[in-house]
Image (cartoon, rainbow, N blue to C red; front, side, top):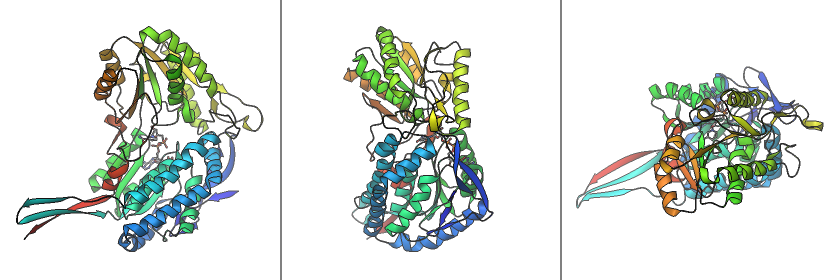
Length: 480
Ligand code: NDP
């Protein structure tokens, strides 16, 4: 059985206290590897390694750090097939998606921040003829990066790349549900010439390893992506220690379809926005508001498009929907379908677990589910389900749809579909959301600020925002 060990000080280690966790392939239900169940003792080793590595790493020129991060990016690219297979086996996602989205995006994350540090500048302010201010930006020291299970390597690299590029050393924890690609990344980093201790990856449970990272006094900042409840726990621990915090949390994203669109085309994209990666993307649009004039036609077109997401073996060519990440999550998703029925909803398609044949007979598959007849204020439309479940809600006017779209505790992402430029601008401006896509979805430019409002998070990742988060500015004022 493969052992997924910690990567500390440039080498793989067993956990100090020796515990292991079963790692299940969600498509088959079978245990296929063992994960280090690390504790605070392993975090201590990782912090020590990171502290020792910090002076030399932060003193390197940006050009040298950039070269090493580019080598990591090339290393990920060279292992694209292996990493994509590992991601699919660990997470349940279609192999084709891991090959076309997850791993390419990890390659891009490393390359983007490797090159961004070559092109940034700091500010200078001339107060008057005799006084000049300039600003320096220094790395923080050792920082903590904690990532979730839905886009494992994609979100792991989204955090560690800017942290390392800015000159910090890192103690990172992937989700214990999807540890494999972060584990494989360790060797890629070693091969790329990353000095020992610059990146340390500690595996294990969030409540044990994650909490130990957040609590550690020598870790200066925490970049976290995950659920809102976990984010609140982390904030409670980190705030009295005055740590910098970046929290990317849950969502309940609206998709707004106005009646001037081409129904078939938009239904195809709205289905993709709701069901890609089994609906397990924080940016998926799970509340679909459709203007009444096209409601019936749109509903029928959407149901037809959803048929393309019939669950299948993630490794089979052509599968667009794989398994949910684990059994507990599958039951949580199914419980929301039961709740929707109790709340008066009608299931238009899907609505149950799917049992496949062959090697996936015991996998955790749920049919893509579309529900109508539940109002915007019921629990199904207020709470994050994070699975292949979407609801359809009709509306008449802009004010009405904006009240419903904004009427949740979340505010991460939204998409608006219309051919009216004015309506697109008006709607985008009034949406309480960190990102608004118009006539597109999941279209990402890595330079843009990424994050949510309300309970979807605090702070922004991406581009210069990420480099700002991972550095401390200093104003130097000179009288001449
Ligand atoms: P969790 O909040 O359960 O976990 C996220 C990470 O935090 C995991 O590595 C987890 O470890 C760890 N963790 C858990 N408890 C603690 C703790 N007390 N202290 C420190 N770390 C802890 O989220 P999920 O992994 O279930 O991910 C799904 C959630 O992530 C959804 O709500 C989704 O919306 C959100 N998300 C947000 C995104 C955004 O950009 N805003 C992007 C992607 C997902 P372990 O797995 O071992 O428990």
